[in-house]
Length: 137
Image 1: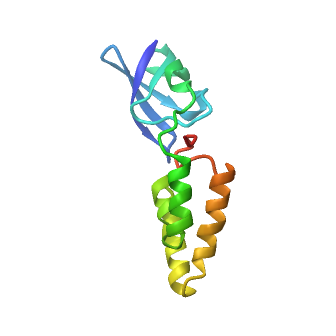
Image 2 (image 1 turned 45 degrees about the vertical axis):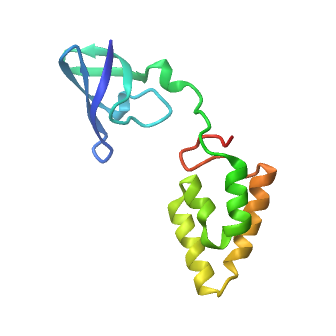
């Protein structure tokens, strides 16, 4: 059957799938996909009364992620404003950006070296994904 994940609790590893106005409970042990379940995912599963078994994501969600952020924008931000961590904020790594800003403030500017190194890594392609794992354009 095809359904839609209505809820999932990562602590108890249980959730609910809705299909054709019926609700099916599931446990993470019946999950077959490599990525964890998330509310809103469309899934294919086998129904046993009110239980869902052999749950897997519908094929559209298995497509490779599309790039939405630009590598050269992040590299230029790192080169010129790297001491602020702005390139990390741009890529979605908010805690790293805050750490970079804190290091710069604590060391009276030595955090700029961190930004320069990351600019080189971005230009050479060694940093090639954003915080959600999507490739950079």
